[in-house]
Length: 393
Image (tube, rainbow, N blue to C red; front, side, top):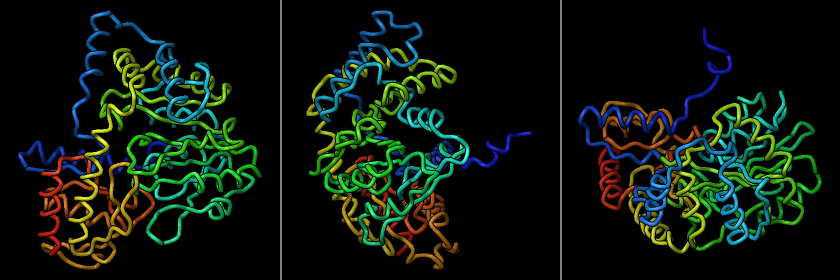
């Protein structure tokens, strides 16, 4: 009865593991969820007030498909302030989360058989979106040095005459790696040889970095007219449930994404858009307290995880709020009567026996790793890693 396309579509592992954790919680089990990329902070009060004001001002009607004009103006100002990028409002499309922004691009650009180069590790939905658009994901694997970053040479080796798009993500989910300006410049030199390839730069974790400034790929020489910059308010402002993402693109592509969105969802939530204006207009310094806390949690969880049998964090992540430990040393071993054959087995074991939710690494193209989010409180992190350590000792 179901279509071949939906039958072939994988379930998002992050969503699946979080759902299993919720099922256990509903049964009364004390589960610590370190699977979802969801900050545990409350939304800043000044953003809450903007939403309350919008309700009182009767913003209850359909919004324009591509977003309120004053929100798009705020996004343009944000790009100029934070990224030194000049965009017009007709280059901006506001969507129901950055996930929809990326899906809009895929559906607007990819023809059957087009190839999309995806460096690993990659966010779980990239390959699924490409496949839904009848494209072919082409994965590029970095060397095993622990920084999880492909080189320009590796990137170029994956390019063929069928390559339509390249997806980049920095700071990276799941590794936390951040590409430097020098590394991105090497990528741009390669891409100058291939003028028809579009770059999707996913910058949703832009503000969550620990010392090294995130670089917008569109700001590099020759890359502006061929780059789609994707961002949103979910991670930096702890507004995951508000579902506001946005993209900036060449006008012809922004128009196509607007056309696609008009047939799928139309405009994003009107109250959330009004709140997003305030979030983006204020200085990023107002959310720095969250980033400072994430850094403390990063250092804490690395110290604790490196004491766990079989877990290895090779380099501290430079951004986002995940660690991606290598765990293959545990494969083939038995704990609590269960044999761990792979990272899927390990994540399930940890959930079912230690009541801690993580995500297996094969969902990100790295079957020897698991992803652990440190967007939970320090107390939860300490208790979660204690449970895992006891289970695997």
